[in-house]
Image 1 (spheres, rainbow, N blue to C red):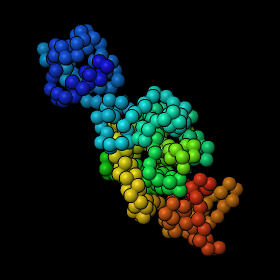
Image 2 (image 1 turned 30 degrees about the horizontal axis):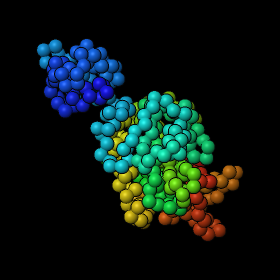
Image 3 (image 1 turned 180 degrees about the horizontal axis):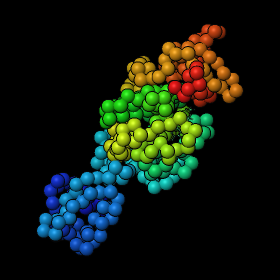
Image 4 (image 1 turned 60 degrees about the vertical axis):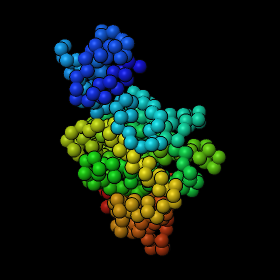
Length: 326
Ligand code: ADP
């Protein structure tokens, strides 16, 4: 592919000019074809300087998702090994499920620049405008069905750590796996088991992060925020995705070594609401108590008038006592 070859050549000489003649010789394409391709790349957000006497120089790569840029940024060994990036998908999790059923391997990632029918937990809708990071990963880890919920906990921790590494932000985890900043939701995670875990052992891990768009782009009633509103500038979605995958891969490896208690502690250190009076909503039913912590499987442990009760993430919602989101 000429596009990829040109980018490879320019990035090999990062900061330096590569003459049109050299590109033309190495790739065996006409100067006109190169010029045309450079124009396309510029339109996609690559900053390429072209000087007739020196040639072309790659100055900046786009912040929007791009397969080539993402590949450059990836440092994980298994996660991101295969990339499926679409402009629009109904839901990256649904596409990932299809691909998994067709044999998609461990680590394959599916991204969309926007989703038309993104999903939250309990069949809820997830708004996914352009500029967000909407990504699903196919995982076939060496773990059992009972450990599936631990993977979504690991994903929350991985996203928190990536945002801390890149932007020195302190994001909190609201049980089970919403990421919040100043009481507002920045990201959500949706883990779904495909088929029978015991036979195929596949988990689809969907991550949705509000990144390069203003809060106003989401519907008004949502208790939400975006990275753009927090930081005041746009960030490189490729680097963000790659950094999350790096942290996630490390967390998955320690889960495969059965370091479950380490994950429980990491999760708890980043959680919001621990030790506080909270409410648990199960349909119409409300249970009140003190949020004591989570079990090794990620179930919420609540100290109630009737003793300790535990709740699994699949069925309930957590709310703070005074009706705030958190
Ligand atoms: P909960 O936080 O109530 O457990 P989920 O994790 O299932 O919810 O996420 C779905 C809910 O998140 C939706 O019902 C909606 O209220 C909210 N939501 C939808 N899209 C976004 C978004 N882009 N950012 C923040 N919150 C959203």
